[in-house]
Image 1 (cartoon, helix red, strand yellow):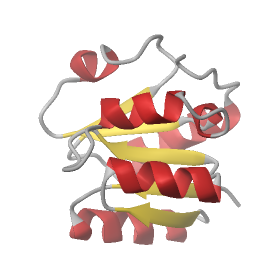
Image 2 (cartoon, helix red, strand yellow):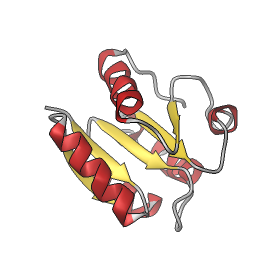
Image 3 (spheres, helix red, strand yellow):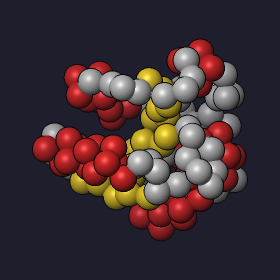
Image 4 (cartoon, helix red, strand yellow):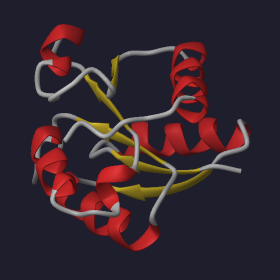
Length: 127
């Protein structure tokens, strides 16, 4: 069973993601912003991180900067998502194309497809 860290400021979306992922046999850990999410990732070492790009204390790309300096955290695959940006805009913050992105609102099928892709791929960190 994979452990997924969800970094999302909206408590309702965060709780919905927890429920959805747990129904699909994932274990979940949550954080309300990128700074706390980085701390949780450092401590818990999840298999995958789902991170909102527009968290209040640290935006997703700042989370990526924090994670890139941590040998353990930077090895964890990250799925970024956002309401306010297009997929090319999201991907433009990455140093390569090995990160995944998802636009809100999204379907369960789309989310599960990306998580399956990440789980089965030889993921390469973006730094």
